[in-house]
Image 1 (cartoon, one colour):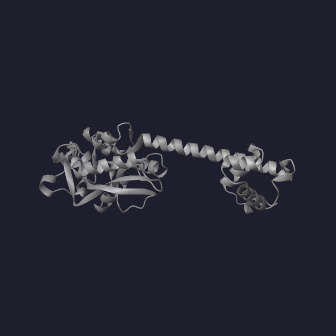
Image 2 (cartoon, one colour):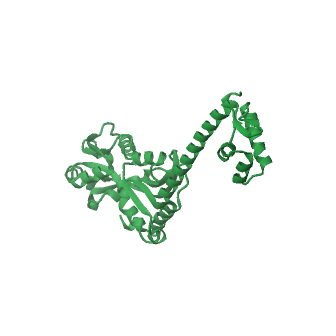
Image 3 (spheres, one colour):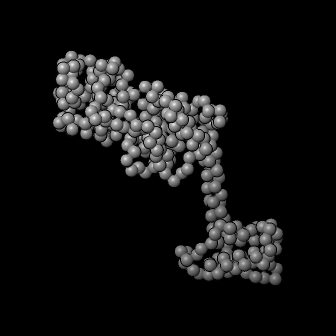
Length: 309
C-alpha cells in the first residue's frame, strides 16, 4: 500500500465509492449518481491504483469490501461528514453576515456612523441590523485583522502598512486643548501658542502605543519636552471627559474638542490625522457592508462630517 502522503483523492471520488457500498453495487450506484457504469468503474479503478490496494473483492455475487476497503470507507465517510459540516458552517456564516453588519469604531466617529445607517442604506436594506460598538483604535485594528467585525473606523495614517484592507475617508487636524487654569499662567495672547510653553503643565495622553499617544509624544519631543508632566492616560472618550472637567491639557482631534474656541490652539504646520475605514484582508465585504461604507462616504462628500463638528 502507498504511503498516505502519496495518495491523492478528491471528495467527488470518495462520494462515488461510498455510493457503491450504500447502493449495493456498481449499477445501482451509477444510476443513483447519474453516471454510466463504465465511468463509475473508472473512478473506482483510479482510486484503487492511488491507494495501491483493492477496495473490493470482485465476486459473482457482486462486490465485497476488502479489509483495506473497510478502513478506507470508514475514513471516507468521516471526511465527507467533515466537509458537509464545514459547508454548513460557511453557509450559516454567510447568512449571518448578510443579515447584519458588525462595525467597531473609535468614539470620535460613533455619532456620525450611527446616522450613516439611516436614509438610503435603510431603504436599500431594511432588514439588515447594524451592530455598532465603541472600541479603542488598537482594538478596532485587532477586530478587523481577525475578521471579528465587517468594518472598522479609526484614527490612523494612509501610509501605515496594515494586515487588512483599508481606505482613507478624510483627513483632519489634531489641536492642543488647554485647561482653564493653564491659560491663566501661560502668556499665549502676547507670545502666541508654542507647545514648549506648557512643558511644566499637567498633560493628559492616550494609552501607550496607540496612534494618538505616538502623535502626542512626537509633538512633545519636537517641542523639546522630553519628560511631559503626565497627569492622566486614557482612551479618547476618557480624555475628552477629563478635558471638559478641566483636569489637564491634551492634544486631541479638533472634532473631539467641544470646548470654547479660546482654549483650542492649532499647530503650525497643521498636525494631520486620517479617518480610516478598514476590513479583513482576503474577505470581500458583503453587499450590505459595502452599501454601508458607500453611505458613509456619500455623507462625507455631502459635508455632513464637517457640519457635525
